[in-house]
Image (cartoon, rainbow, N blue to C red; front, side, top):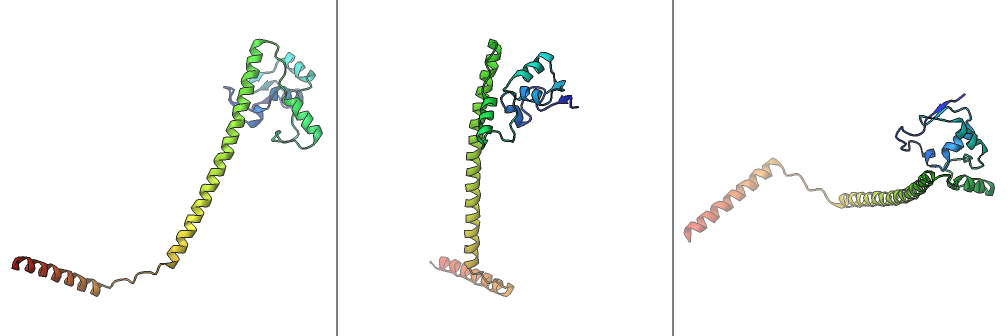
Length: 172
């Protein structure tokens, strides 16, 4: 049986999105009653008993749990996400912090969606610019290559023009 499970880093930072679920620890203890270590923390017997008695220890049937479609799933999800009553001020502070983190996560997700939309628009604009540049370059007639004989003649003409300018300058 599974006795040791780790979803978070030792510092408590989220390593897996399931850790963001309200009551995820309680839900896992209900689903896997033989767990001895969860996220490198020992599971006490009283914590296991409280999780077994709680109707809120329900794991969502699918991920992400934010979009249930069946009415029964919606009710179950709402119950699982409901904030439990705090038994002491420290627990209430933790629940408040969790609520703030969930709100920040929702804002971060919204910003991520907006960033993806901006990136998609930039990619589309880049593709349009490349297509326009390709169309323009296809319409431009290539210049003929100048041969070495023609280059020598142009140099000669340029040198003669400079000599005439010098002679005209001396005459004046």
